[in-house]
Length: 130
Image (cartoon, rainbow, N blue to C red):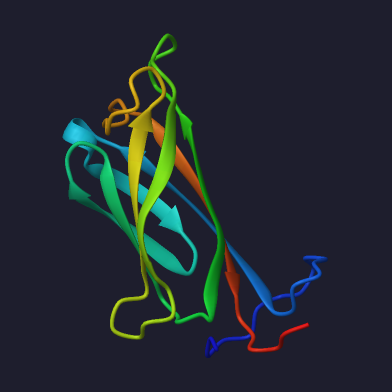
């Protein structure tokens, strides 16, 4: 379990859920120009569009990962995030790997420079089972 107290307010059937939110601005070649993430950080792993989110705490499991792109190019192709690796319960790693995928051809692609990626991560923070 995480070593911090998280604020309550999420009504869920799953006990001990934690939601983390963050955002990063994409620079040249998919690099991260700036980020504002609470409870995790994001780093470019490889171009095109492959990133690693590193959590500050260890959790029992990953319930959901979602990324949405505010594209800097008005007529740009859509992008969605595909999870490629997950190790949120491993103290040495605490990571989620993801790749941005272009909706037009299904291939890994960088978000255009100036684009913003919004991230929501939902985690299990309890060993309680129903």
